[in-house]
Length: 419
Image (cartoon, rainbow, N blue to C red; front, top):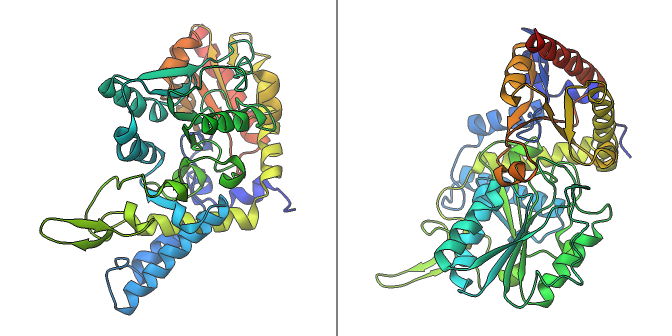
């Protein structure tokens, strides 16, 4: 097991010390995007200086070399999630991956009486594509209700509930909430039961792993999902790159999301045929440097991070932060406090009498980056009875000192508004 040292790891991330040379810089917005280590940044720079070429198309040495790097990255990602390489499709991010499934598969298979099941805690990216499609097809969206006492779905039993039935076509659910953190039970037995129930009635399952891919081992074979979606930028990789896992049993029924170069087997004046997956699903020039950069990010995680230790580290930071916030009478924490202390990677809260945007803006002036707003989850925030909140989210390079500085600055913000 690797020894976890956040202070040491922080030195690998240039922005965290280069900006601090100019002014205090504490980054606590990791649920939105993570910072990048020098290891990944240097490789991307090196790629454009030494390797830049297009993949697949060229017989020359540079093109062959880049194609090898690109496919090596795919193989690393496949191993990371325990998938086969042909099941890993490169996209621009979680949002495109989910829209891919909506437009290329569900739009072709959703009938008037069919139903889509999601949770009440979804990010807009895993809600709006289904909402638009259901409206077009005159189908229904049904929700797994959030228990507002426990901030989880423990009032939902997949075995006894008729929410998932013979009319269900797709179950599309988050693995972890970007507002509440972990929402399934500790061993994920509830989630696995849900997936099993969906398959029993002939439905398919999509899992939005944007918030978990960087901090939890995901095994697609163990979960037995049909699709998963995640983004590279949330796991110390580049922006503009995401992954859509499509179970190989689905390859014959999922059509290409886009068509064009590279993905064709044969084209005539009046017909065309597609290559096998994954090429079938990657039309045009892909995000080559970004995909290879994501492979390098996985190299870094594999070399330096033990996910079990990372979970303990993030939970300790959440616990320490919550202890501090609970001493401030104006603050109300959103979510299951005990679970956040043991399982959390983020904490959302509201400050009585001060809008979340004002809190965030004042913290920023003090060199601290947090998120404020509805976190692209407006239906959820409405359900919670708030219009916005402040979100502090941690990752592998955050420390207790970061929390101390944040709490000190938050006190200053509250005192300023009191005056």
